[in-house]
Length: 301
Image (tube, rainbow, N blue to C red; front, side, top):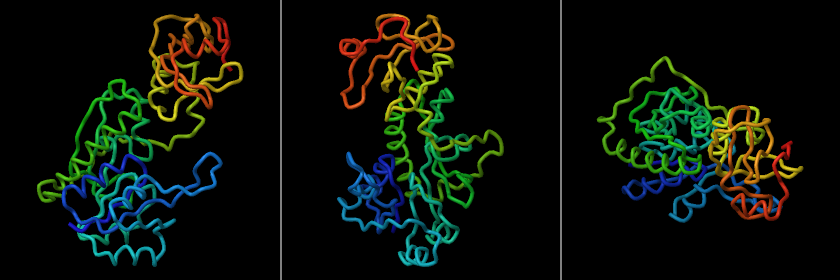
């Protein structure tokens, strides 16, 4: 098939690779424009999809919007059989949805209609979902409301957002290749009317661990925000907690209750197993405590 690929972050790269490996003709890749990156944020850095497409010799387009008539005409002029979308990040107007012969197919990282929206992986972890998965959705104008052609499930099972993202990207890539190989065998099926939830975009304020909540909820925050890393503040310094276990012990919420960095929550406690100070490498609590004073009784801000 002649395919337009539309994606931006790392999650989308395996999908692009799978399309190429399956022998499809990816005639263009759309991605969000390069963003400032680097230590000082001056140099513009292309998205992971942009960089990968260039490596594969695929022409890249990075419009700021697809709402204009010119951008829509340029898209239609590609005369694609289908557009494959994976975490692109821009709204697709109806003219764009209608342009390819078979419309636009989206790789969505949840079991629709649960977790429509921007951050389905993190929201599934935060909510304590036992299972999640990937849907191949026929896109329409609503927010992830289109009919589903195929789905595949996996367990959340204590995985971090980073690990789950990689797993779902691989599952979604394989599933998309299967659907494209037999579109008539995967007819679109309307989503159920009940069970709809929305995965709102993550706000950076959510990265701070809520120690007034249960230890289980705090541990889910640790997993949901790795990467980049949920954090607490100890003696005025932000410390990322990259892995933690739940401990069946109690204390004043927000207080270190022993000499191995166990932190009391509203109910129970979490014991970090991997932490990181600003500008430092990842370390164990023992390594952290050799260079940072945080004895039992320390109150976290």
